Length: 366
Image (cartoon, rainbow, N blue to C red; front, side):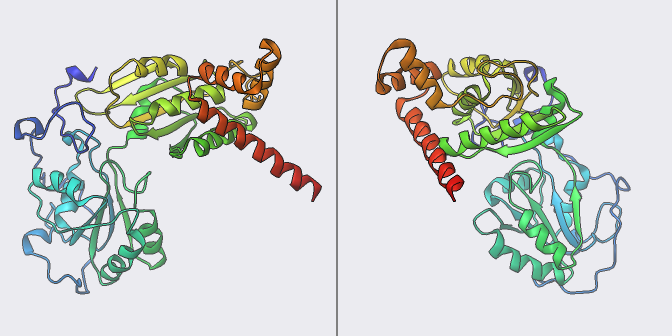
């Protein structure tokens, strides 16, 4: 367990269970080791639009200039000990750091005494900011891109800027490091030979269930079973587990990886029903979550086999009406209790099913 970990963790988000903002909790700073992992470099021939770079920042650890280009820099996902020497070298040597959130990144930079200027580059301004950054890059600039935690571009901003940079002939350089999806996968105990990264599911309940149904259909047709990897926010994890239980049955095997690399790192392994009950019994679920789903094997509850589609709400309501001799309103109420959802959520799902059926009938007639 992570409670026994010797590394100290710095909370770079707002969900941590421990206040690790003090200097004592931040762990030891990492200095440069000259000659280790030097970057191949090329002479800089153009002037950066932000002006001359300070001499003390212009060189990598081996004394060579940092090559011009766009650097995608992985940052720790919780524990500062996961920063790499090469990442520190790039962050110090860049002309500017494009950040998902400048306030979050500044915590990391302050700890390692890095004074490189920062600029915001997030999902709401990435396309606009890319114009400015590309001008600098085409002029021979060195731009580092970071997200709040982990690898930029993985469920985080950066993809658009990378595509535009490649189209403009700018060199794009990945600086590897911490990644929540792979860290959770290798420690999950689930198959790693084939897996699919999904990222965040839609926030709205209806769209989330539709996506899970689509994934179930894809898995049913797949020749090879694969582990699925999701990211989820702590305030939505119970809803997501409930929807997975509804779509794939309570015997679905899952792993909930929480607070990775931090003091309270935790792995919950079991069925989706067991994981949901465990988290529902807590006062509050904290920390960012990586959710892994095992490849279905054998018969899952509510299916005819591994390739069967999940039972529809309308079908289950019809069953309850026939079995208990009640009307649709009462059947809806009983089904809501059965699924652990609100009556209004189940009703909305029923309306979505009927709307899809109507749309399909119109398409057939046309």
